[in-house]
Amino acid sequence: DLDEQKCSLTIERARREEITNFAAYTKLEDFVHSLQVPRHVILLVPAGAPVEACLQDLGKFLEKGDVIMDGGNEWYENTERRANKLATLGILYIGCGVSGGAQGARHGPALMVGGPQSAWHDDKKTPTKLNLALHAIAARAKEDDVPCVVYCGTGGAGNYVKMVHNGIEYGDMQLIGEIYTILRTLGKFSNIKIAQLFESWSDSILHSFLIEITAAILRKKKNDQTDLIDVVLDKSGSKGTGKWTVQSAADKGIPMPTVAAALDARYLSARYADRQVLFPQGRGSETSSLQNEDQNKLSQLVFDALLCAKITSYAQGLALLAQAKKDHSWTELHLPQVLRCWRGGCIIRAKVLPLFADALEENPEIFNLILHPNVSQLIHQRQLAWRQTLSLAVAHGIPVPALSSSLAYYDTLCTPRLHSAALVQAQRDCFGGHTYRRTDLSEGMSFSSNWLDPSPEND
Image 1: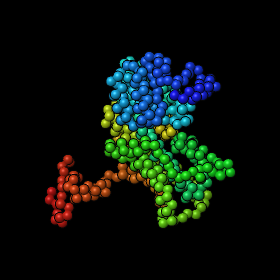
Image 2: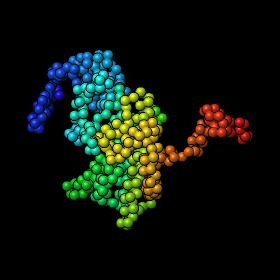
Image 3: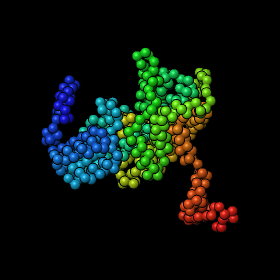
Image 4: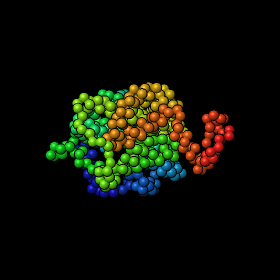
């Protein structure tokens, strides 16, 4: 750090925490020259311009064979551009997705690595110094104590996987938020009662880190012993990875309705003033407090609805990763390994992940996770509760965009004949001559009709 005082404070803290083999520098040149050759430099700075500035300065002192790893949430194409530029100098550049937040920094994150294979292992598959270091600092899965590190492929593969991880995170958070809203608004549950309900799921298939921290959030009090959550301003922020996920999915033709709905929900929440103006004009019928037996039934309904929607959200993210693997020739990107990496350290760690990993291991060529019988059966057994939950929410004017878009995604996949799609294509041909294909004639043939002419169409 250029600030001598910060360096001194950091050294003092390391001493207090009995961290040995530690040094801090105020001059970049001194820092670089202190490293063993080949040097390994890890950057943990905000994405964008700060990374560019660091690389420009580091480039003055690094040499052929040195390795730089960027651990920020960077757009994967930026990583690939930087890697190509540094490769001309013989410097290896790694883009590593890091998930875990503040807890991960102290107790181990999940790490998604992308970059040249030579920075990860040699020709005999012997791990490099960086490989060993990342395995040493990573979180470990509770199931088998395996480090939560995955090599995703060359170029920006690691950043791309982390981007999709964050997209799934957006969806998961919104889904939990909608379930919370249903329980508070329709069920008249207190925050403490919802916290207790979420905690009761700790041994179930629905348990996750986000459910765990949500229960803790709902228990947090102010000094006057009222609930802190009730005075949090209802405007959700975002930093870009959710938007990147939706944009990349659109570019690749992969539907991501749950993440898109979650992103839109954040944008809509920011329209705070508009919501205050429109509030008196709309919404569904008001609800009275539910009886205990009705609350118990609602608790089970929302459990099933959340599980179903969560499955579809992950399915969308994994479908995007599968498409990206093909598009970018990331042959080392193994989705079951990615899911096992996400079992510890990261924000979306969840009890259901091993089931997903086993399903994709059993059938790696499957188009969509929901197509696996073990996964589809989970939804099939619970879809009625999912629909009932949505019906209750819609009837009472409770916005549930992620839950409803997830169900629409599932229903669309389960519909062999999409009449709406046939009509849209006919409309496109009618006004724009975009042609259409027919199910009753040779596959591959295209047709264009004069739809406004009332006479019959000739075959």
